[in-house]
Amino acid sequence: MYRVLLVDDEEDVREGLVVEVDWEALDLRIVGLAENGREALEMAERVEPDIVITDISMPFMDGLELARRLRERNRLVKVVILTGYDEFDYARQAVSLSVDEYLLKPFSAGHLTELLTRLRAQMEEEIAEREDVQLLREHYRTSLPLLQADLIATLLHRQKSSSYILSRASQCGLELGGKRYGVSILTLHPTEDPELKLFAALNIAAEVWADHKAGYAFMHQETVVLLYVEPLDGREVKAEDLQQQALENVVRSIRHYLRVPVTIGSSRLVDTLPDVKHAYEDALLALDYRLVPGTDSLIYIADVERQAAGKLRFDELKQQTLTRCLKAGTQAELEQGLQTIFREITVEHGRSDIQLYLIEVLTTVWKAAQASGEEMEDIFGAGFQLYTDMFRLPGLSEAQHKVSEVCLLVQQRISSGRQHVYKDIVEQALTFTKKHYADPDLSIQKVCAHLHISSGYFCSIFKKEVQLTFLQYLMQIRMDEARELLRSTELKSFQIAEKVGFAEPNYFSFCFKKHTGVSPKEYRKQAASAPEGSLQ
Image 1 (cartoon, one colour):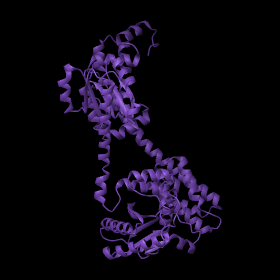
Image 2 (cartoon, rainbow, N blue to C red):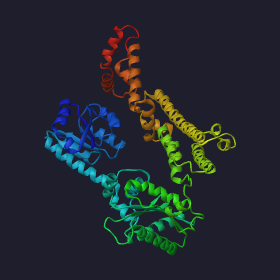
Image 3 (cartoon, rainbow, N blue to C red):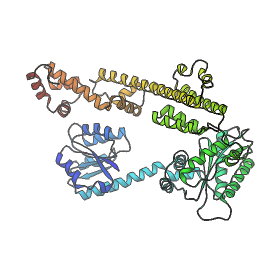
């Protein structure tokens, strides 16, 4: 649902808009009510509206200035101006500036509903244009659009339900309904212009795959992935044979046109879309069996596993999963990932195979630690002493416990380093704000310019550390200082407003009453009659 912010200085108008329009039927949700432009601007930072409906004439900040400020922060927000006859020409000029629609008072709920329906349709068209699916299809031609590639990546790495995958597939032009599925991964022998050659290989493979009506070809993590979809309508030839014919033609065509050796690892066929994730893992494992890159044309996992049953391999997919858990996962995700890694080990594996497998795990952990820039010698030991210690552990349970312990320590160290950076940035921001809160032009942009970071990044870490948005924190500081000045000085209200960063005394009074429940004048009276230290 699209999010709507209503802004009008008349409470009956605001409440009337809420009850007279069927917002849910329009697929809209009211996320905030504001009584002037200043309040609306602050509220917009918190609720992030898609549509703002605002009166043109309000105290402190009018509707057009609000529209301009909103558009500076988010060029996609839609602004609707409500205006009277005497403001009509003024409002019409606004359409060419920062306003999307205007509505002449008095108006009916039907008029507003019609306008919002039109505006929502426009927003949906703009979203479709931004996604630019048709342009991507034309640009890539026989390769997949980015939207399709995103879905396929989900298919390869996450076990979503068949209904979810089929629903998303139909939305982006993929027909994934089939009896069974297979995954093959294509890599090229190292050559000049590897990216260009790989993209050319993708186009060739996609054309051959389409000729065989075998499924889809796409680029994924610097490889070409071929997804085989067995048609629902029966064919006389076995699915395995059809897939093999298509793969052999892919190899021949790439060798003929690109004159570069190619290797393909191919999975078993699986019965459901959620199992495609396992098929992808099988294809990666098949590639791990190549002796010399580029010299083995087709490697089928079923063939090599018959020859090397039970071989432990810490493949690329497991490495990527463990690295992600160490750098950005939770402790629970890391523990679950380690359980999956340890589950590969059975009593049938030899001691040396298990030791080498766990050494591969630790090597991945060490690489993640190095990439983080954190000092890890106390964990791994001088000269990789930890590796030597692994060979001295008496049993599998002790080795698994040691690997788990190291992984958790590294994850905590990486997380701690990241948190230290966050806290340092926020501390600098707090210091700068406390020093410059009296500047009426103090803004997020000024703080970010001082810290040399982006506003989006700053806002996310500031709220995470302080539990307030920056504007809420700035207002809190200004109100605290204003209360102190009212209690301890004889300064006039307008003088205090200036000292705490308000250019307009009236807006200061409005904000002060909103935060304390009383006006500055009433607060001073209460402070004078209250026992010392009892009034905050």
